[in-house]
Amino acid sequence: MPRYASNIQIPNLGAAVSLNGTEQVEIVQAGESKRATTQQIADLKGVGPTGPMGTAGPTGPTGAASTVAGPTGPSGTGPTGPTGANSTVAGPTGPTGSAGATGATGATGATGANSTVAGPTGPTGAAGANGATGPTGAASTVAGPTGPTGPTGTAGTNGPTGPTGAASTVAGPTGPTGTAGGTGSAGPTGPTGAASTVAGPTGPTGTTGPTGSIYPTGGSPDRIFYENQQTVTVNYTISTNYNAMSAGPITINSGIVVTVPSGSTWTVV
Image (tube, rainbow, N blue to C red; front, side):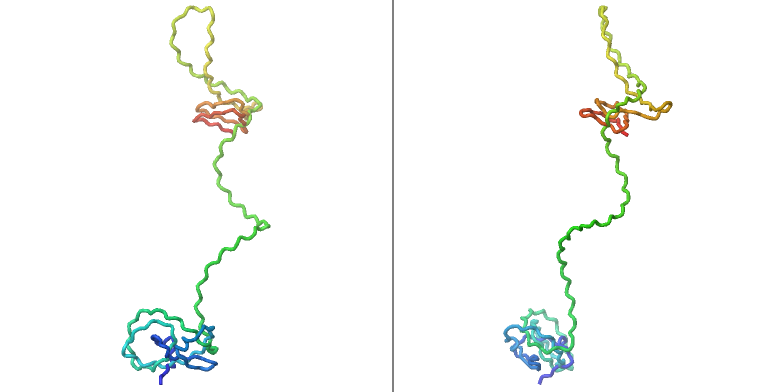
């Protein structure tokens, strides 16, 4: 008569070898414990719902140790066979065999009686992927509060000089006469002609020197104000290597050009 282990849990039992259908397993039928063969389980048609976990049966005694290591069979998912009698001699540990192919899943057994002991909680599943971002909500019809004023930024670079303002309708004071231009070199003396009875034409006037600085004006004896017109009505070229200054705003009429040579500047203040 086979002996059954009463103190060994099922996960600690040895793995069964290939099943042939004659192995017996314990089942619960109509509230009573029954025995069935693995072939009866395999012959079931259809898969019924999985019943609640039944109460754990007693662990049978450990069978006698084998003196010959059997070959490692393929890993199947068959029912657990009865535990053999306890061995008094520990057998040698055999080498670990290669993992066999996973066997086909057996049919679901009959529903066992309700367990009175809560089973252990399974591990927490992995977190699911983030869902897609929802649509943007409608714009608010209420203006949010105004935030505090930010710090003052650094001063930007000076912008380009604005257009010249319109010429003044009031004549400014006449500045002092500029330095006379240098005298041109004398040409070669031509042959003396016969004395003319008619006076010859006057020679061309030499180039006028640049205008000197304008003195300020004001109520006598003050000399505080520089006055200039506001609109440029004729083309004008600032003297080379001289700078010019005008009190703005200044307007340059259409088609009129003010030329500032390289090395010179025109400042409108």
